[in-house]
Length: 95
Image (cartoon, rainbow, N blue to C red; front, side):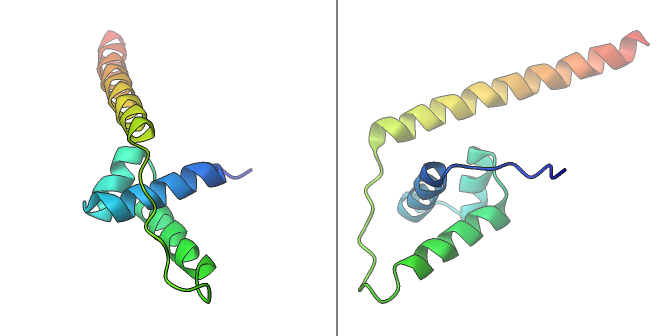
């Protein structure tokens, strides 16, 4: 069984739009979204290939509300991750 996570097409499109519009390094965007840099690069490449022949790719506006929601979710997951690290540390100390 594969342990690779699967992402919806909407998530991939949003990730590509965020990466292209934010002006931040791809590695940082990928880390914030909890995906691999390789996956993000592949999605961007596929996105560009899908628009070839149809003229220049139009600028995709980033939905501000969706972006803020993703940032809130990111912070929440970061807090949960820190909590789990601390929990694992204390669980290890109990043995």
